[in-house]
Image (cartoon, rainbow, N blue to C red; front, side, top):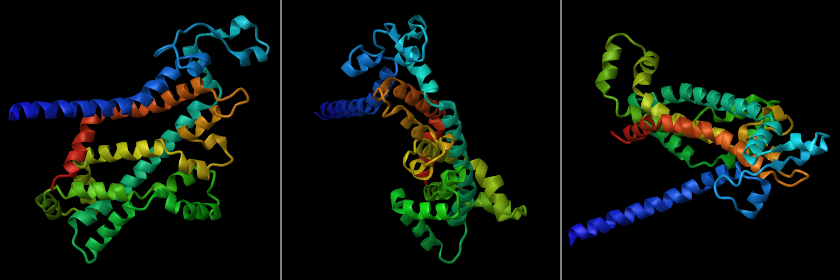
Length: 298
């Protein structure tokens, strides 16, 4: 009876996991499928995964005065070509790389010393400071967006890279995550470094940093994904300069066209934007899981 109950429980767990996987993967399936289909197949929701791939005619190409035979191509080629033709997609992706990497590097520079102090140094008010860090985790971004925008506007920093980077250079989540990891590092290792004459800052960068690589990779995935996919804040501070648009903001270039929304090129652009994140996560998956696991140990 117990074995039968356990088998049914395992079966139920697998069913729930498979159902959850379908829910998670369905948007990716639709994104890739729509990026390969013609507009007619997208509107009628036909054609399976990649559509019939019958030759279609680019109406804009004909309007520009080109002969019809030069304006005929397959949907898969048209959608991805249009994604780069309709908007400077490479520029948007370079902006995304510059912004996300800058934010992450500055977050590491700030978070590591703060986390080390909260985890390994004894000073008056340490628990209160850590409590404030936990409290700041509860504050949503939208609650402080207006004060941040006013501050940047008065400083003349809107429509600049600085406006995209500065508000996120201090990550309370990064401080919390690294503090939890540093709690797992033996105090004997730090005492030995002090006996060798190392300063506290030297211990942070020469002793703690190498041991924290798994946790940093985990934090890096969280940080880069969050800011690469961020649409809200760039939409607030980038209002006049299209050259500063990040990838999610650049997708607006494919909406509200005179001929209607271009779902094929939009989904092609989305696929191009999402692919680097998926590849990076798959490559760092083992270290990501290791970092999350170690931060929960004490």
